[in-house]
Length: 64
Image (cartoon, rainbow, N blue to C red; front, side, top):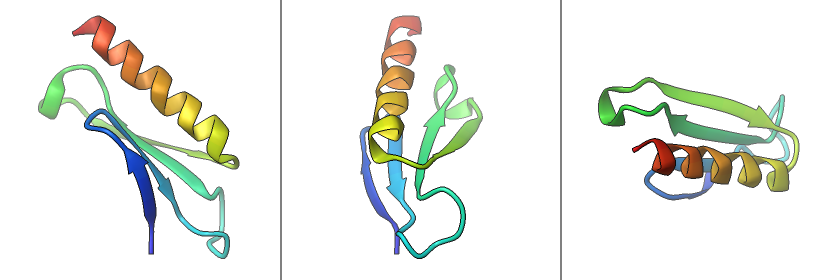
């Protein structure tokens, strides 16, 4: 089961401690709204994932 923290612009998913690979996954869209590509980036630490998600959200707001 995935846990999540997010807004409309970026979502941080917790894959769980028992899952292989990096635990935290950030899902976000490139600028361009719903037609833009959805991207994902994995992280080892929640803090780093949250910082990345916040940066992506801020970048998208500034470019809108």
